[in-house]
Amino acid sequence: MSSMFAKLTAASGPSRLLRALRRTQGGFVVLAVLVGVGAGLGAVGFRWLIEGVTRVLSGYPDYSAVAGEPNPLVPWLGPYFVLLAPVVAGALYGPLVYRYAREARGHGVPEVMFAVARLGGRIPPRVAVVKSLASALCIGGGGSVGREGPIVQIGSALGSSLGVLVRVGEDRLRVLVACGAAGGIAATFNAPLAGVFFAMELILRDFTAPRFGMVVLSSVTASVIARSILGDETFLQLPEVEVEHLASYVFFVLLGALAGAVGVLFTKVLYLVEDACDTVWRGPEWLRPAVGGVLLGAFLLALPQMYGVGYPVLEKGVSGGYAVGFLLVLLIGKILACSLTIGIGGSGGVFAPTLFVGAMLGSAVGQSLHHLAPGVTGSPTAYAIIAMGSVFAGAARAPITAVLIMYELTGDYGIILPLMAAIAVATGVSRALSDETVYTAKLLRRGVDLDLTGPAAISVTSVMTAPPAVLEPGTPLQEAAGLLLATGSGCLPVVSGTGGYQGTVSSVVAAEALAAGTPTDEPVATVLDMPKGVREEESLQEALARFAAYEGDGLPVLDAEGRQLVGWLSHRTVLSAVSAPAGPGGGPGS
Figure 1: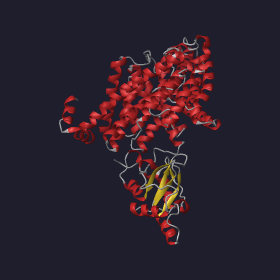
Figure 2: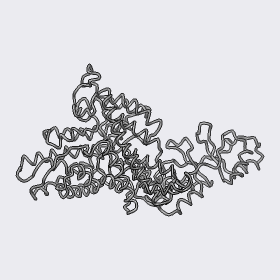
Figure 3: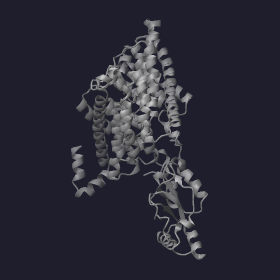
């Protein structure tokens, strides 16, 4: 690696280095490794940040390990401090997310998938910072979500930022985003193989050898960085298991079917609760996490094992530390607590909650079967481990990742065959019950189908440009006509001083007004057209329909509320995008 970097820097100056990083295969390798370093350090820092916030708000590095104990920092509150922790955390991260990066809300992975498929891999750098702080506050304040989704978004934002800085092409930028995602998973789980296939299955959704090689480099680098700082232990200590009877495979397959259904149930409840919160809430969005934190705090008071990610509870459940009845309580509790955390505007992942739900399901099933036929069914722990991967596969429909993550967490090759069988069944059941996954459902609810191709798969924001010129409502008609002539544009947007969209002025209307004797100092506000602009979340196919209904040669791109001008679409840019070679996700290639 050092000799490769020396060759890149041997030429004259930074500009030559940037060109080499941007265009050569050796430069691409260097970028992938740098992303891995950043993702590894980011994962370690994020883990420490969560632990620090959790210590401040609960008094322990992981409160779920001592569920029900008072906070030693405020012992006079007793266990009732959990009523306040989510409120305090929400009051901090709510305004942070609303003001600086609204895409940091929720579980993060869908936003990365959308950026790769529709935005050419572009993720604003601020997302990494805001997501880190918001998710650490949410989890440390009792939010029952995982840290894996946030680190995927953080690593991906780092990869995107580096690629934009170097100005690589869109195809390489997408790969660097996937490198960041792989590195984040690898460093968080100490699972480099799972990191690679998570990025390939869910983020890139495209297996090619060159891309695979770059993602592997980043994943390995991130894992080495994390291991050198945190040690070589996996974050979960799961016991080894053996499958002693062939008859057990029948039970594993049935468990896979049940786990697949539970994975779908997890997804449905997650978005049902989020819809309910959207329906009920009528206040400002920045205040929603703090107010909703009251409900979450009450839930945690009743079931404190739901505080934070809950890895100690997961380990105890896998090891048979809970009775069957309480395992089912924990299973239902995690689904509801995670859904409520996301619904009130929390920031955190759903990867770990699916593993938690699977562990409780598998342990309950395993213990029940063991009581019925101890000589045939085998260890309940095996059922817990197999159900962990199966519920994740049912929710995310990423079977390769599910198999590899469980193998790397256990280090036990003996579990592979029953694990593969159960996960295959879980994936099939999930597909039969639902067209959505826990990740794609969020995008489909916004009208984004990643399986679409052509104009319907290209986002407006990926092809929009800045308008040739922007007019104010008080601009004299004569001046507007001059700008229309100078820019060669058929129409220009009219925007207020605060950026509010007012309409457009076309060259035809301006010429007709002047020819009719309208005073030259007449403000353009009197001759506005009001074409229906395109929203930034819409597709190019929807923009084409608007062009067909409007005679101008440009359309404004507005924000989600339809008030602020954020870009401009012209016939030229639309035609260029439609005729460009298709890249991943159906968008224009690089």
